Length: 242
Length: 315
Ligand SMILES: [Zn+2]
Image (tube, rainbow over all chains, first blue to last red; front, side, top):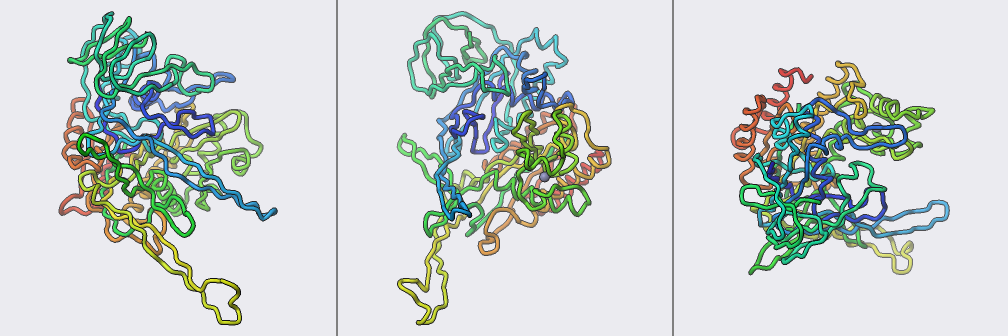
C-alpha cells in the first residue's frame, strides 16, 4: 500500500524522547510510520487504548498494528532542513538574587519551500497476518486516508493519495531506489543521509532499551549493491529489512 | 467523529509569536523556506507561529468555555498554567494520596479537568501515565505561493521615563529604545479535533464519564475552537500588536474517522480536500464539507459544522 502525504510544513521528531538532549530526526523512522497508521486504524475499530500496562512494563497500543506489516519505508521528495531557533532561558533565583541564563533550542525538520515536499510511505502488508486479524484490507485503506500526523501533535499531514496493489518479494544483488532502507552489508552509489533509528521490530513506545538500526535515506535515486530483498510497486523499488 | 479545519488568515504588523529577546530586540518566530535558485537551494526566513502557541490559545478558550458550561477545570489550568499533572506536586492537587494504578490516575485527572481530558497530559513519574491530545495543530506558516512576500521587520519603539534634574543620577537614560519584530503574511494552518477521545480512557478504551458529561465537554471543545477563530484571540502581544486583517478563507470537514483537510498553505487545498473526501464515500462513510471562501463568512461555515454534529448526536 502506497500512501502519499503532504506535510503542513514542520515535522518534529524527537530523536531521544527520554533524554534532555534536544536533537531531532531529519527523516521519518519506521516506528513513526507504524504509529501514524495505527491511530486511525484503532479509531476505526473503536479502540482508544494508547498504553498497555503489563505488570511493570508498558508499551504503545500501536504495537498491535505492527504485526500487520512486513516492512514500511518512506520516500522524502526534497531534503528537509533541520532547524531550531535559539531560545534564551532565564532562571532567577529569588533568595540568592542570582540570574542564570542558558541558551537552548528545539529543532525540527522543515519541509517547507517552493518544491512539492511530498512524502510517500509504503506499507508492505502481511496478507496472512491481516487475514488472522480483526481488520480487513478496506480498514487498512481507510486508515491510510486517515493518517493525521507523523510524530508530535504539530506534525500534521494529510493523506493525498492511497494505492493498493500486490508486491512480489525478490532476492537480487542490485537495485535502484528512492526509498529509505537499512544500511547493512550494502554498497551505495548516490547521495543520502544516514540516520540511526529505533528498530521497529523491538517494539513501539518505550525506547529506552530498544535496539537501533542505521537507515539510509536517499536524496533522489540511488544504486544499491548487496544481498537484497526487494519489492516492486508500480515501477518503484523498495529494499526490505532483512 | 473527527473534525478538521483549514484556516487562511491575513495578519499584518503582528507580533503573535515572539521567540526571544536579545537585549532590546524582540524577535519573531521564523522558519526557513527553501527556494531553488540556479539549481541551488537558498533559504529565506519567513515569520511563523508555532503549533504550540496556537494550542496554548485554544486551551485558554477551552478553560473559559468549560467554566461557562459549569464543567470542571483544575486550579493550574484555571490560571492558564498548563502543567497538565506533570508530576506528583501537580497531581496531588487532584488526588491525594496518589493511586498506584495508572487507570485510577487517568480517571482522577480526566474527571478533574476538561483541559487535560481534551488536551492530553503526561504524568512523568512511576508509573508514567500519558494521554494524547485529542486536538492537533500545525504551525501557522505563510501560504506557499506568497511566502516570499511575507516579511518580518523590526519596529522601533521608545519608552520614556520622566525625571527632573535632581533625580537624574549618572547616566540614567530618560529614554529607552527597543525593537519589536513584526510579521506580515497570509498564513495557513490546520486544526484537528477527535471528538471520540473526549471522556474516554486511553488505557481501557471505556468511558470515564457519563454520556451527558461527555456531550457537554465535546460541545465546549468545539465552541472553544470557534471562539478562538472568530475572535482572533490567539498569539501574544495582542494588546498593542493586534494584527490588521482576519480570516480570509476557512474549510471544515467532519468525518466519522480521522481525516485531515489539505493544508491551506497549498493553493489547491480546497479542491484537493473535496476530491479526497469523495473517496470516503466508497467506504460508506458520511461526511460534511463546508467552506467559507466567497460569500459565506467563517462563522456560517463553523455553524454548519456544529449543526451537523448536533444532528449526528455528537452532543
Ligand atoms: Zn488541568
